[in-house]
Image 1 (cartoon, helix red, strand yellow):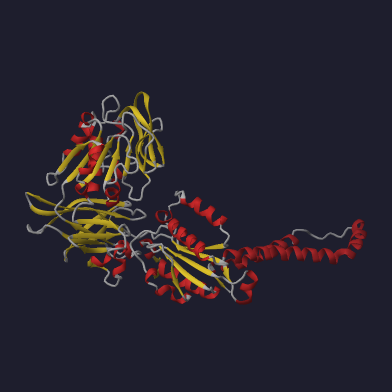
Image 2 (cartoon, rainbow, N blue to C red):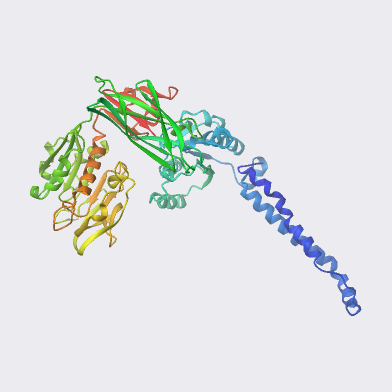
Amino acid sequence: MTFLQPAMLWALPVIALPIIIHLINQRRFQTVRWGAMMFLLAANRMSRGYARLRRWLILAARTAAIMGLILAVSRPLASGWQGLVGGGQIDTTLVLLDRSPSMQQTGAGGGGSKLDTGLAQLTDSLGLLGSNRWALVDGGSSAPVEFDASEKLGSLPQARSNGASSDLPAMLQSAFDYVQANRPSRTEVWICSDLREHDWDPESPRWKLLRDAFLASPHPVRFHLLAYPGESSSNRSIQVTEARRVENAYGTELLLSLKIQQPQGVEGTASVPIQIEIDGARSEMTVELSGTEVDIKNHAIPLDANQVRGWGRVSLPADANPADNDFYFAFDRPPPRKTLIVTDAPDLVAPLQLAAGISPDSDVVCESTVVRPQDLIGAAWEETALVLWQAALPRDGEAPELAPFLRRGGRIIFFPPEAPDDAEFAGVRWEHWEELAGETPVSSWIGDQDLLANTRSGAALPVGDLRVTRHCGLSGDATSLATLSGGEPLLARALTDRRNVYFCTTTPEPENSSLARDGVVLYVLIQSALATGAASLGSARQVEAGELPADGLDDWRQLAGDGDVLSTTYNVQPGVYAVGDELLAVNR
């Protein structure tokens, strides 16, 4: 017999606790010979044997209960006749493997990563229990991959680490579909993960659906969890938030913005060397890190005047997790940022057109075009970065160009029409307009990310200065990014895969809000969405691992990254890839 948590066996000496308590209890009383009670003792001698036996049985039961509890927590695995006593032969074993970058973290004393340790423990456990069939569901493809022996698990290409996040609900759905399709007599599901919230998505409504589906299934399924939740306090991660080529009085430069994070702050400051590589040429800079995070904005790196585009990498010194020590980027001459304003009332969208048409950077061209909903067919969707929609929500089939636009990474912000209907988009629809009691301020907003994030200097946007006198109700599943003092959402994001569909519940018209009068928030909001949407247009792009589909990888050519990875996994492996005329920087 082996144990999944053998460290718990160190608690076995605790089973002596009832015996110690019993002996102490026996020593509590002193014997005093009292003649008046002697006859009672004589009468009690006849039943003393039964009383002693009862005490020893109670003591043995208490000891056995503690030992059983310790053994249960240590999670024993049994094979042979012991396994037959605990249950029948396992027909199918499904392994759900979390291969996200956080699983590359090593232990405090060195050794293997969480992923390597989990694979070794899974191999031993599965070999001990046995099964008629094995299948792996990895965090990249979520499609089950069958293998014929437990010892082959670690050698599967699908068991290697990658840069993509794991979607545990999707993996469990894949496991459920596999069970329903193959109808095994007895199934065991083993989940190996470090329990990161980003991978598990605990607030997702899919969990309830999965629970109900497994409970209603006629095929019995038993779940096991190998958890590695520990996080190293000394680990640091690096990320490129922006890589921008500019031409200014100093010549041609690359402006690089970085973010360095660590789980716990340090006393004082720590000097962290950062290595920067651009097209193979390396340089180094030192950053003073204090607290848990530091942002470096627009670090200038000289470029040759004729270097229009290229790629690079920033690196941290080795630490507990090598997967977050490197970050790749690609740069090119920025494409024009084009905005499409869709409205039935062109005379009411002048503030939107003005905010979308003024560029925050002299090197970037901003253009905005106003069209009516019926004229969308002729719009230049392949050049559009942002759509501002102030009209009735499009119904199915009314704006077919929106689907590929959003899949590509474009952004859309809906503003309420004057006469909302029952149309729905991305699971959200407008309700009716409401008059508020006076000018209502914004009580809370998310300032560390998304459209209302703080400025580059760290200063907060003056969202609290906005006043709203009239707003339109919103129904459906959405994440509120800004909330009015009465609890109504002002800005919300629909629950879509790309997180690129937004709803603003008022308009810039003076009788509705102060968005136009206090124009800073409106301008930053639109320019932030415009910049994010434009990132999907250029010939040099940064994408998350797993964001692009696995089909069409034959055209990918690796320029930087791990040379040992399979070409069929380029879309989930960090690196720089040339795809036709495009440069793609894939990161975690």
